[in-house]
Amino acid sequence: MDNHPPEEFTQVKDGGNYGWPFCNPNPDTSNGFNNMPFDRDYQFNADGHVNCNQMDRISKGIQAHSAPLGLTFLQNTEFPSLYSTGAVVALHGSWNRKQKTGYKIAYFPWDSTTKTLEDQIDLVSGWLLTATQEVWGRPVDMVVDQQGNLLISDDYSGTIYKLSYKPPQQVKVYKDANFTGASQSFPTSPGVYKANEGDLSIVGNDTISSLRVPPDTVVRVCQHETGGKCREYSAGDYKYVGDDLNDIISFIEVK
Image 1: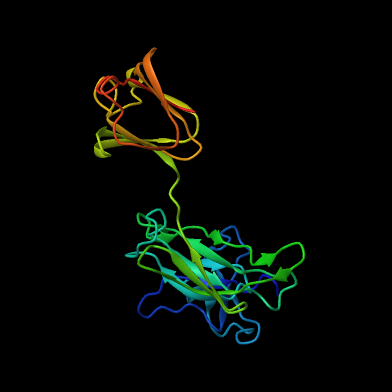
Image 2: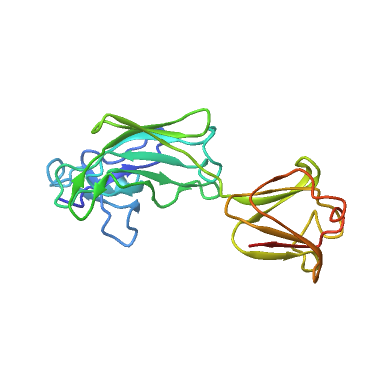
């Protein structure tokens, strides 16, 4: 069947019994893929000689025929901290389903409070073209390198992909010259930040001595919230803003 039985991703314990091959988790209840109840397996347990109600339920299901192969826990790796409490699973993809499924890297967050897996997030996809059902890649496994990149193997094209995290560009100002001392960052989207409205922590009648401006960004800094002496900086690194502005900046505008 296209949707049965689902693939299983579950917590295990000593002496646990997770049904196979006599009982299969059922995703067609109000629980969905979470803590699924069991159905009797048609081939091995049609007469119910094995009590499926006594089995330990499966924590999390994955769409049937996804063919999960590789599993990598991201804890204690250099992968970006936003994801480092979870795990990634390589879904190699289906071969016997009417509409293909899988062909992706799935990410499962970990809830440290409840000690449970959260819902699946598609971290990397695109190896399956849904409209045409054309496949150009089948992921197998993943590993995190020392730089925090996720290396993904693909046995369909014989490729290893590198997934890298690129932090968002930000304007950054520093208390001291040469990009030292306390610092504060601002998004590159247009915005105005005023000391008298609590937007500025290290500046605002305090001090700003150097700043970094990302590409395609212009920053205007002024002595006072209402204006005063101002100066604009285009993309680049500025090791020192000058005595005429130093110590008296209370207004920053990102254009």
